[in-house]
Image (tube, rainbow, N blue to C red):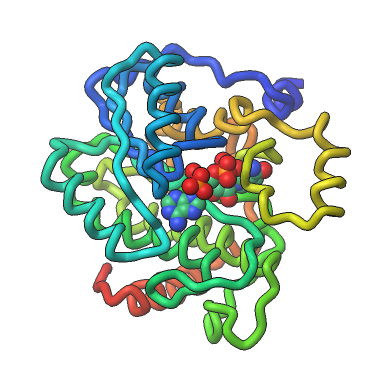
Length: 298
Ligand SMILES: NC(=O)c1ccc[n+]([C@@H]2O[C@H](COP(=O)([O-])OP(=O)(O)OC[C@H]3O[C@@H](n4cnc5c(N)ncnc54)[C@H](OP(=O)(O)O)[C@@H]3O)[C@@H](O)[C@H]2O)c1
């Protein structure tokens, strides 16, 4: 009954305050990211909304401040499809911020037509995984100095039907937009697993999650028939506020402080796929990602 209540829309309720904490949320100008920003701002945190489109970001900033009553909310430019932008963003954060207590890797693209990032990665693996992998790496020292700290990777149940094609991670030989999305979301869970292990004992904990099937702009690239289908199942889907609840739970729930590397859904621990628990695959993805990004991260 409790599970059903959580699955269908209730807000995760807790009075945990975040006064004095700093939170970065990628893709915070709309959807789940924006609602997460509103909630965590209401709890008193300084919120950095990391967005690629500064016009959309300004409009969202106004809304987040109005809805939360918290003036300590700012926007910063971050385009996860370009490592130059990621490095500029991280450099500014490392210079300007004394701490980052919660990093929420939320931004995402789904089933888009084939395209490449500025660094030559297929867009979905590039933005959803590689971009966040590099961002986390570049902020790691600051996050480690801000403990207790949390890193949250917004994945999806779509990871369950994903595989990682280590020989052709950029889908250059053949591109299936659904497979590429699932691959990127599986990469989020594997990254969480590896990072959780590497950060054991540092005071930084890591979580991956499925937010539910949520009415957001994520569905923008669906075909007309797919959009019609989504319209039909709308009563069984979540609003953005409801879809943000598992992210908020992972970011603040006191009972998760001793947990790391796991996967969550409907504000509770959940089972991930067999491949998502494969340590060998997680290591190989880690090494490939580091190599492709030209970084050395042990
Ligand atoms: N909605 C669902 O049913 C669902 C289900 C499972 C998982 N998820 C996951 O939830 C997360 C949030 O998605 P959402 O549903 O809230 O979708 P959304 O409304 O489309 O929001 C996605 C956000 O990511 C941003 N973004 C896209 N490409 C970017 C880039 N290159 N650099 C920086 N930001 C970028 C978007 O910016 P623009 O506004 O400028 O495009 C937007 O702010 C995603 O990781 C998604 O995979 C969603």
